[in-house]
Length: 293
Image (tube, rainbow, N blue to C red; front, side, top):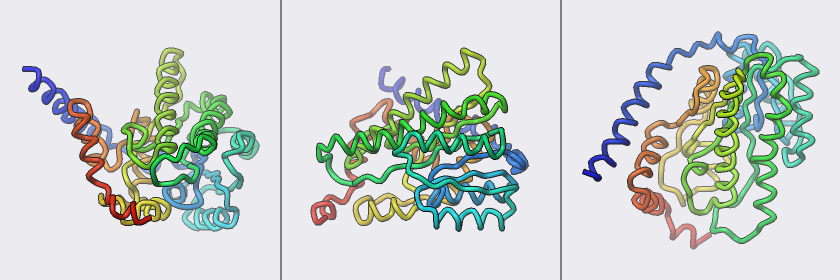
């Protein structure tokens, strides 16, 4: 009976989840028209694509990343696509003060904020953990503490607008993947902080939603370069991923899974067969390629 119970629970959860997400598919681009949105990590990849989607929807956009030249190009494209306004701030999220200044810039420009999309990530290696504690600390500053700092700075405006916090995370923040130890640690930290904060918001009747986005492998340039020849699973398109993240934030969903089957199903398997999931993950790597590198 125990085996059938273990099999039944994830099956029922899957059916309920499918029904829930089907029921919530009522997104309309007009929801973002005239809204004030910060997007971090927006010079390339998923963040860049989110900026373009928001521009088409007529949002006011403030984007940030390290490279000014790339940000200038994204801003120009956003204005061409119909953004209500588009501005940028360049700097490194390793500097917590800079993270706070981004929010201060939005306050100076707009005096308001409807959505904070936290998407930036520090560069890391794809190999066995090399015992470099300094690298872990640096990634925690960029991938975690700057998220916390921006959230704290943005909360007064978000409480006023009844806005949304959108946190871009990863399957590596739910499941332990090899060769991403420092990165995975920061993503697990995001889940713990923002899931706990969501609970407190409910208890305090704070009208600010938190959406945690659990992403699988996406075809960004940085990801494709890191896993080239090593990871055998197909990558999902960044353009569609970016739109799903925005939809989830606008609909105030608790979590977004993209692509759904490649992220949600493994997490259900983990509940009743964690060793099997670990085995399947290890099998998806080309170890000979890693040895060559």
